[in-house]
Image 1 (cartoon, rainbow, N blue to C red):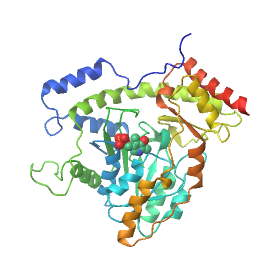
Image 2 (cartoon, protein in one colour):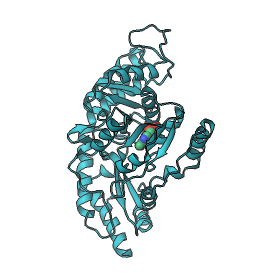
Image 3 (cartoon, protein in one colour):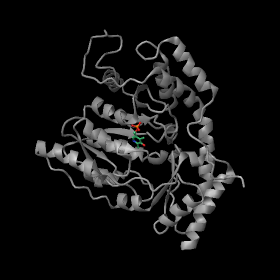
Length: 385
Ligand SMILES: *Cc1c(COP(=O)(O)O)cnc(C)c1O
């Protein structure tokens, strides 16, 4: 039996990555303070996402923290975030002394709901972090309008959305700032890494400084105009990222084709909820394939595991119930004598109880493998219907 569960490994690479790595090795310029590979990748990635400026840094978590700091978000400020996301979206706010405030997600798309965000705004709110979860762009028209109306910074957490586009424009610099991750699981990866994109040259300058111990471009080595971290990417990482970026469109085409097939085969199955089609989403990042199964999640997860699809998972536990995030948030608000808004996010509770994730590697198989996944899912649903 050809094993249909032998799904492709990740990352994918060949001699091009090896050659790029050796070039950096032999150049002796291993860091971006002497080499130019990071700067080259920054330009290439910003161009890929149609942003004016790109600043690379160590990871996607600190990308969000740096974006917040660049935007002037600090102690006691409130940052509205979704509860159904990776913990970094909320913890990044805590790292700059700000308070993450949770607004609920939409039941059908799993994405932050602009109406819930509007209701969560207080006079302390400074920013909103919109997550393009699974690679699906959030409602950026609504969020950019809301940002203008209330004078809030809109940050796109695009860690899962390389190559995704909203109304024909790649995500990342549609809001004020956009953050990306190149961690091992992500669709473009160097093992670790991150980037912030923006069209705003002042924010770009602030980010350069935050990443480079407060230095300014062209300034002296010991000239620190601001207090900054050292968050620099290595030239080795950038060398791999340049090749991974070139490879991305072709790999993405495979994911898109398989995601279409999954959607076509599962859309009309009773008991399975897929996010609705939306013409505003002109490219989906395809980092995860999400299915919501109100009555069949455990049965389907069990069947997938038994069939060998062991990397299907039940996904996030909602962050508005995470004790560590709540403890740190309340430590800040108590110290400052501010109220901490208790979040009521019933949709986040529902989606976290009912959703199954298929990882992006499950979108990289053959048509037969993709059909085997759908057969496993639909049989489990039909058996328990
Ligand atoms: C992966 C991820 C991050 C964090 O990126 P790291 O590079 O792992 O620090 C942030 N937000 C979301 C939505 C992610 O998926």
